[in-house]
Length: 120
Ligand SMILES: CC(C)(COP(=O)(O)OP(=O)(O)OC[C@H]1O[C@@H](n2cnc3c(N)ncnc32)[C@H](O)[C@@H]1OP(=O)(O)O)[C@@H](O)C(=O)NCCC(=O)NCCS
Image 1 (cartoon, protein in one colour):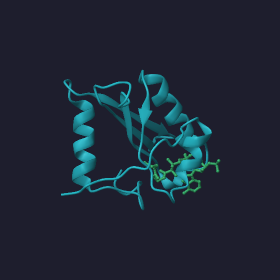
Image 2 (cartoon, protein in one colour):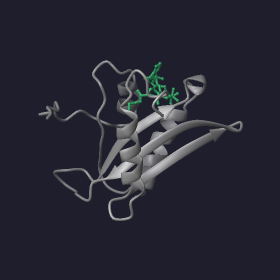
Image 3 (cartoon, protein in one colour):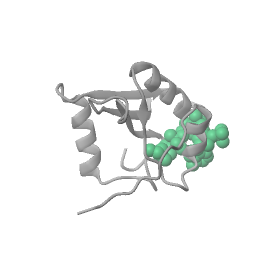
Image 4 (cartoon, protein in one colour):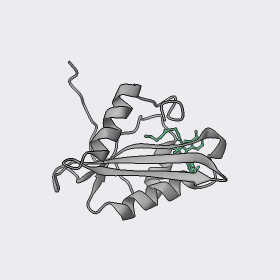
């Protein structure tokens, strides 16, 4: 995932933490994997927030497709399956220059706020 997410990748430790969160029974989420022609070709990871309303129930933290399998609709299909698999609203973070924004907007995601972070 660290490689496939480039150039929008996170530190491996953060990706691992996100996967552990999704697999933790008390917190939870969903991990969807695509296997195409015998190759792992895509992955989507959702973390449940345990909230609803002012904080959406689901964060689509990672969506990535093997570069060799892009442009065939796998990213769209994965996102649609994620939306069906998880009840409640979604949020996600995406860099302003990431072409994935077109995919999300085509599926009905809309920007609501600019996000600011105070990092320590
Ligand atoms: C975003 C990503 C999952 C799309 O996967 P995909 O299987 O190619 O997606 P689809 O074939 O369903 O749709 C392609 C759409 O993705 C968008 N897209 C995202 N990255 C793209 C890229 N590098 N090149 C071309 N299109 C890209 C385009 O908007 C395209 O929409 P269009 O058909 O309206 O032009 C894949 O490009 C990827 O893994 N990117 C790196 C990780 C990333 O940025 N993830 C999203 C933020 S967490």
